[in-house]
Length: 397
Ligand SMILES: *Cc1c(COP(=O)(O)O)cnc(C)c1O
Image 1 (cartoon, rainbow, N blue to C red):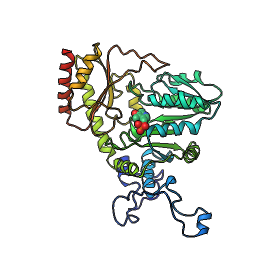
Image 2: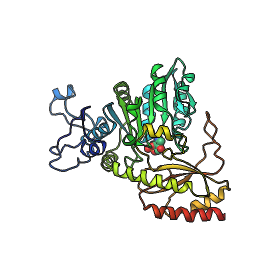
Image 3: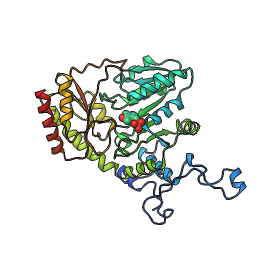
Image 4: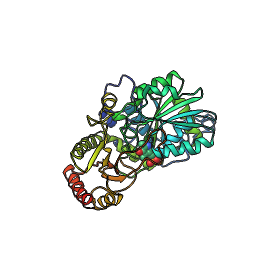
């Protein structure tokens, strides 16, 4: 098959099939299923005329290789017909900063959800502020009420669905309707659901960003980011990617492409195991609350059901009040849940968090210690047994 052309709006294939078929050009690869990892900076031009005209399929390593093109084709195919192009970045944070720098200039104002990934806030409070861009944080549950926060110079709204650590669900279509009426663009950090479970560009988002480090890579072995944009935003995103010199390393690009091929089966299992664990935790006396939008009694459930087709394996729990040493003793006792930043790999993780120090538009007072869990691909009964032992330590401490 030859799918060197990006899929069109008429593409009748389902997302799982597109993840497997897009970006493949068997003939160009001498029959092999996968493209090689192109390590390259210099591209040689056959004649001076070609050089003067910048003629040729590829011009320079930073601007793309056959490996990056294959990955971009899969990403475009997954995002859907609204997607006009995808920029590749060396990390998720670089994808976010590139998107924000593309939309805002000195004297502008941006609106950012209060539950955004903390380094996103640090970028806004640090570099954007230094370059004369003002940030206002908003309650992620504000919905159409966001209209009151707009200023004449508001250029962009950044949302994350669900937000980092606390998993509140914003109403993206409602926020996007207001933003577009005011001439602002909407950026969505779509890392949690990926475009497989949340087609954000079809819900009014102009620029959809992912930390490909997480589920796209899927094996905790790469740093990578993606910046997808609709036809309205792609020209400024593409220009900014070029101006900043943003690109991803060849091995990480290859591993991201490899990860895309199995994304649907991995995410389906993360969804299943994550939800089963969330329900099991709801029944535990040590747990006050489970923050997971796919649970029927979660405040964000109606929006999740309307806008998402699945959930990933990441959610949080609020424990019964106990001193931190009880939580630490529990964490130290776990054998299958590792402690560490990032998530989206095959392995389960547990990490304590506290948003109270940095949220500014909302108050974070969960009423007990909080843990963020990533449910990996281990057997779910083994994972429950690990937590069961952990809770015994928690209770005894
Ligand atoms: C991890 C993460 C990022 C940043 O990704 P890196 O690849 O670590 O830079 C951005 N947004 C969210 C929601 C994340 O969880």
